[in-house]
Amino acid sequence: MPTLNHFLALSAILFTIGTAGVFLRRNLITILLSVEIMLNAVNLTFVAVGRQLGSVEGQIIVFFVMTVAAAEAAVGLAIVIALFRQRETLNPDAFTSLKW
Amino acid sequence: MDQVLFYVFAALTVVASLFVIAQRNPMYSVLLLIASFLGLSGLYVLLDSPFAAVTQIIVYAGAIMVLFLFVVMLLNAPHEEPPLRTTIPVTIGGRPLRVGAVLGVLFLAEMAWALSRLARQPIGGDERTAGLVSSVRQIGVELFTTHAFAFEVTSVLILVAMVGAVALAKRNL
Image 1 (cartoon, each protein chain N blue to C red):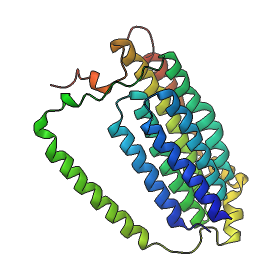
Image 2 (cartoon, each protein chain N blue to C red):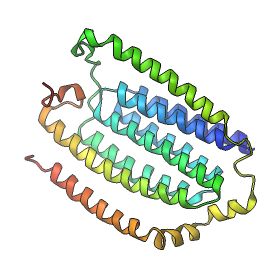
Image 3 (cartoon, rainbow over the protein chains, first blue to last red):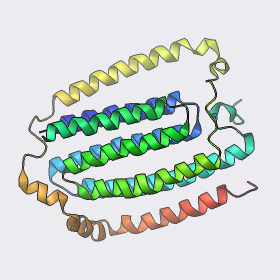
């Protein structure tokens, strides 16, 4: 039987993979996908801890996280489309107008 | 049995996630992330949470990932360019990297310490709590009574996101 530790460790591994993706990738869409991996790692923590405490609150907050993830994906992808129209590239290094 | 299933689903999730960030073609990244969500959904079933498992498939794999897929195809999936490492000045290359490595090792040690102090009993030890957690009816009751306000605010959030996405994607920004 897996313990809570197993799930928390797995969640930490997934979150680290997501963070590494955000920092290492040079593609706006892959960066957004990495953010989704991080959100899912947190969801796994919520469900596991909710299961440990015998409470449905964990799954309820997962429901809200999914809603926020959907909104984030919609707005984020709209921004990606707008940026792609401007520069014809998805490389974040190309968008440096705010740097000085 | 549960132990074996846990490792199967965990391996699927971690390997698929690793390939997501190792992939140069965003098309494959999106498809691999769906495989990763499949593994996560199996883990939710192991945690007696069928509601989370089903919404994971329907909402994440079914809606959000299709949105990503749509945008990748719309933008004609340009392959990632080689990293522009030359744009980073050489002078700041060394020190932040060392600080980051030290922070990473500290974080790893802290995680190991925290996990070593946790309780060791199996997560599904009590059958009574399993029934309490897996009840979709209970989730509905909680969602529409205790969390009714948050639930309603969510609809405003979705509306704002929808209007924002339409406004951002308009032809002349």
